Image (cartoon, rainbow, N blue to C red; front, side):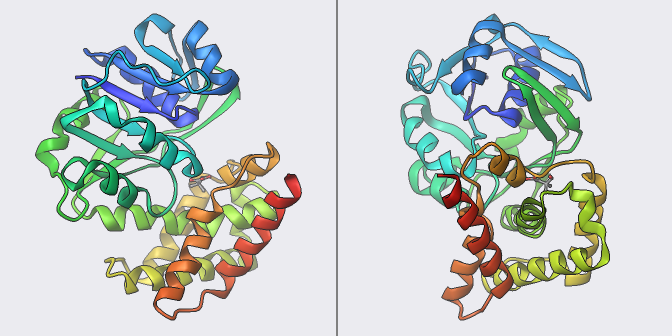
Length: 313
Ligand code: KPL
């Protein structure tokens, strides 16, 4: 089975290292910057939850600055897009020649709209919905800290492929100890992760705190109300969600479980990178407008985060 991972930052490199150790086919890893160059030269080192070093001859590394490797064109069975949300569309456009008629595509990036983009490009019969809750970050180029074990959820999106077509990949990810799970309702899978991200990321990023600080009563109430605005929009879109109380209790659990993390949006801001706000809170505001639903807290947070991005320029 041939796998391609496009946009291999922390999460993509973690998956790549594990697959290169267990897979029996070709593995194409497309990365960029210093991280990409170090992987191409030395392979990937994982630390934290597991210690693992894989050499560069276990995979084919291609660098974004040079161009996508073409030697596996038409031969990739599973394409995993793991880039930042802002780069998903570019990764999709790059990958068209990699696939064959039965290839399957998953996008593990944060935010709304990626599955729809993949479907538009690759066709509904080739696209799963997916999300990931493993925690990973990069202390140095080429080195991935696996900070917390989570799951990789793969789901059916509308009339897309079902469990049978995901089984081979689920087996591989399970051999890799990456805890894959199948979810029948792929739409609520995407939204459940988005609701967590809109509630935690911009607030922790603006305060500059670890996720755990958001458990203080007033901050947690703010996070919860941001989440409920998002849930109202999701329900208007016909997404089946648990009650608000259940969503809020899930939010509490996620903040507790990730209390020592600096969220991805804060890390982006610290590194002067674009944030994913456009695919998170701002996407909630825009979708809310379509239904005449006002989402004032998501709107304010979006404006504040956008202004940080602008002042970074
Ligand atoms: O997904 C995350 C992120 O930082 O993007 C959470 C769950 C908030 C963990 O930090």
